[in-house]
Image 1 (cartoon, rainbow, N blue to C red):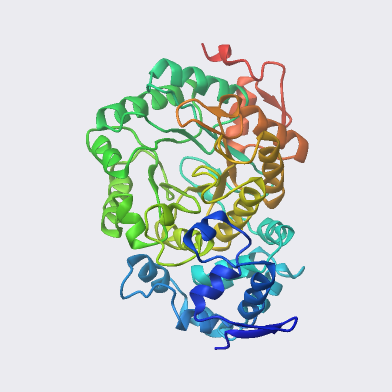
Image 2 (image 1 turned 90 degrees about the vertical axis):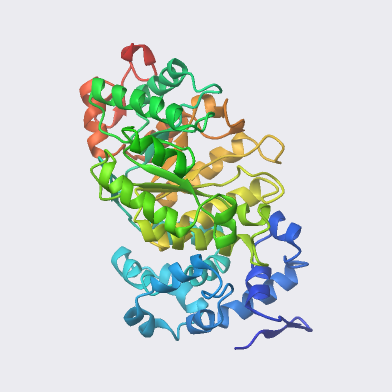
Length: 453
């Protein structure tokens, strides 16, 4: 395995794959904070050159985090289809990139070879891609999933209604939810982040969202984004949950910081399949985001893009209904400005889709980041062009509970109108019955939540 290259009169020698992977990344403040980033553009290019010539077998034979010491690594390793890997083990990362971008390579071919890839191989390909490459490759991939309805079809842009409230006030949640529905948003999920992490509060919110779904016969699914243990207690008390939720990290130690492990996730998986109210077969909602492992001191010297890809390798085990990266939520310590947020959103979407996940993105930033709403508009358009399964909608793009900026209900409606995208088919038929949409276009009553009051 060659880890040395000459470039413009300089010789670069990298000590191991961790260093190559980290220094081949596009500039990220999180990698700089961890002390593993390339010192300049020349060193970054040298690392990309070395990475491009490595084979898939090189990467698999030199694990960044050995399966013997990390359960996420074991999950990723055990999922590899050995027959397919044997066919492509000699490919270089450059050849993998070229294969994905080749005009004649379609969704079924990508789907097949993805089963022979590890998460690290997927991350390596992303590091060699431009933003346009990431958009083009991801746009070829169609990953559908079904809970109560199906999303992810070509030409469909779903939206998560995120009607959070700073005190979990049920009437406040419902007011925001009605606004979302009036704009045609909520086909991905009616998903509420609770302030109060108790089984009783989670159960109350799930009951209310189910009541709204039942009263108006809304074809969608509900979820409360509490800790998985809290949701499990609520479900055992009879709470009507279509999906079970959890945030994931890309290392075992990172997941310990979240208070989870594989055995717990397996237990929750069995519970939601036995006692959940979703029809399935896809009954999980996972969230991720570059930098969470570093913030928990659980990164093991691995860069944040590779760790993010490993999150998707773990998520794949549970065949989720939706996954999304909360791309700019942690802050400038990990993604300094809009340029880095946009790059991370495109990387995450590509890496998730290549691992056959129904991938969404929370197009967002925190107020102390060097970014603004125009930057989020840019990223939302790029992701819609890339075929993102869904994005997040909050009132006026400002989440009053989580205190960060995302995309609004009407932003999703605008993206659909501008790019010729539609809601999920079952949900669109409901919108037509309600008079909110006609022939793929919102009607004059759209945006008026009083139609539900």
